[in-house]
Image 1 (cartoon, helix red, strand yellow):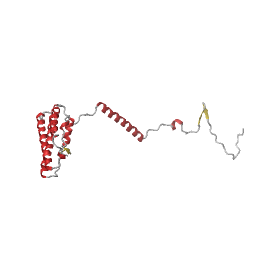
Image 2 (cartoon, rainbow, N blue to C red; image 1 turned 180 degrees about the horizontal axis):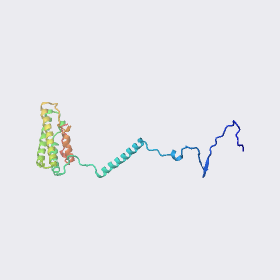
Image 3 (cartoon, rainbow, N blue to C red; image 1 turned 135 degrees about the vertical axis):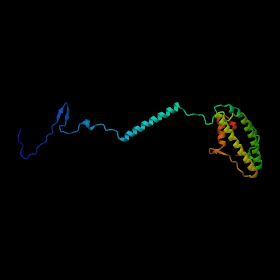
Image 4 (cartoon, rainbow, N blue to C red; image 1 turned 90 degrees about the vertical axis):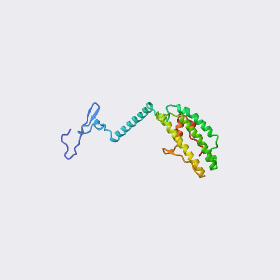
Length: 212
């Protein structure tokens, strides 16, 4: 083996590889290890936010289902009377009034203005009698909430009958007069009258549709 290299010949760089238990370790100092290169990176802000929002959505859905199961919404309509004594007695009175009005021709079918005014006036007498009978069986207005609701309902009814009387009087002077109904809470007052009657089992105590 020659000890001296031929002058001018290029030298050879030799990398020494040490084999230990069948694995090779790179002898070059400073090379990164496998464990260091695969270090787990922290979650980005966007990914953390997405996970938090998803968790909150799940909790919200679970909470809503729990509320629906253990605290179901009330199915009782506003204005429903706790004591059904008045509705039970009132509906037959209204039935009598409806039967009496059925003997008259519908006002909207009466072409002559004066005859129509007369039909409306006759119907109003029947309705006023009905209201007087209902007043007689109604509880005192200050007794409880039911009594207050009944009193308000009867007052609305009288307002509605007053609108009918105004219409009948207008027809006698103006053949083209129109029927105007007082508004309550941005609706015709007949709407809350019918609502209260329907939800308290007084189906025959709704307002008549004989005019229009």
